[in-house]
Length: 83
Image 1 (cartoon, helix red, strand yellow):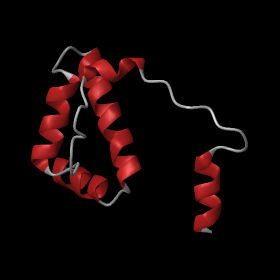
Image 2: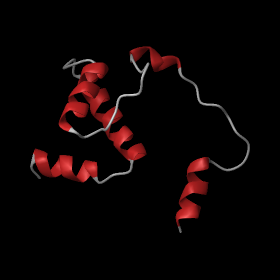
Image 3: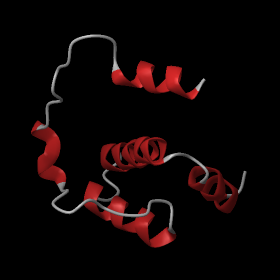
């Protein structure tokens, strides 16, 4: 696959999946000391792979902890609703 074909496929993904791709690419670049997470996000935005970088987003978000909810995971509910 060419880089452009990969970008085209990523653009077909829903926003949440695009975010996962961004995080995976960013993590890989960070582990290899290539560029910062913020720089990776800027590059993906410039290429049109992602549509926005949320305001206030930066590398200090590492202390984020999701809110726990009772019941089954929201992702399962969404998948069931799509059927």
